[in-house]
Amino acid sequence: MGIADDARNKAEDLKGRAKEAAGAATGNDDLKAEGQADQGLAAAKEKIADAADKVKEGVDAVKNKLSGH
Image 1 (cartoon, helix red, strand yellow):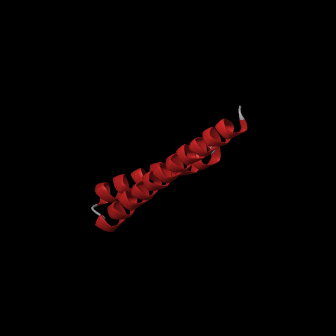
Image 2 (cartoon, rainbow, N blue to C red):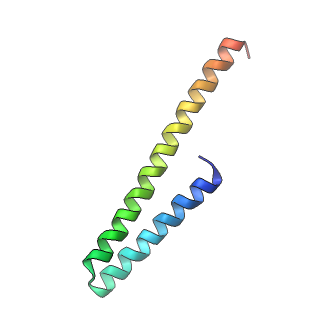
C-alpha cells in the first residue's frame, strides 16, 4: 500500500469516528451509522491493500527465484 493510500484510509477512518461520535452525542442514529459504515469501508480498503501487497511480494519472490536472483 502506498503512503497516499494509507493516509486516505486513515483520514476516512477518522472521519467515520467523528461522525459516529457526533451522532452519538446528538442522538442522531443515522449519522452514527454512517460513521460506522465509513470506518468499515476504510478497514476493508486497508485489508484489500494489505492482501494485494502480499500477492505482489509473492510474485516478486517467484520472479526472483526463476531469474536466479
